[in-house]
Image (cartoon, rainbow, N blue to C red; front, top):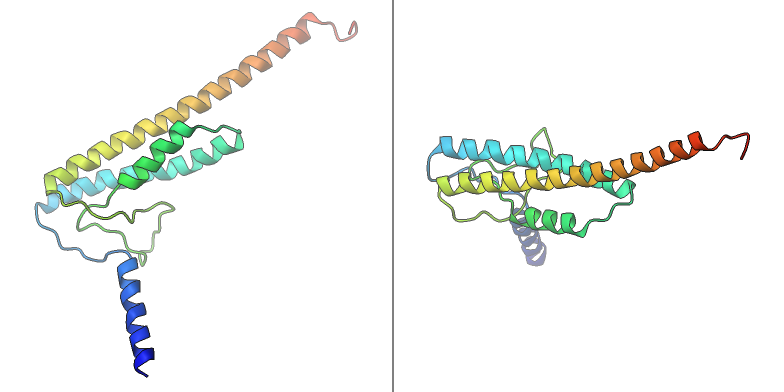
Length: 158
């Protein structure tokens, strides 16, 4: 009986450690944290867009280690804002969300950190768009070359 009870307690403890934080306590200005969270949510929106862009890259046979490395670093560095931690019980669940440990920042430092992370994810998204645009332009050039060849060569003579 003790083993079963101990096992149940150990499992409950492990689950509470692994699950997302529900703590909403924070020191500092709630308005600054709210602004930081708005920026954070915008960053996550862009990261979710990038999930789709990654699929597009893959579908087009585009491998880019620089983009992968940038995303890996960004994913490792992004943190939630104190008092605004996500919950797995929320109605709206993101495809992408954060489980990285909080950093011991002040409210102003959290705001600045979220601004930097937002700028970084926008930059990554822009780089992906550049890669896709470059691929599209190359394909258009190749199609244009075929059109010129078709115009020069009379199909009846070929």
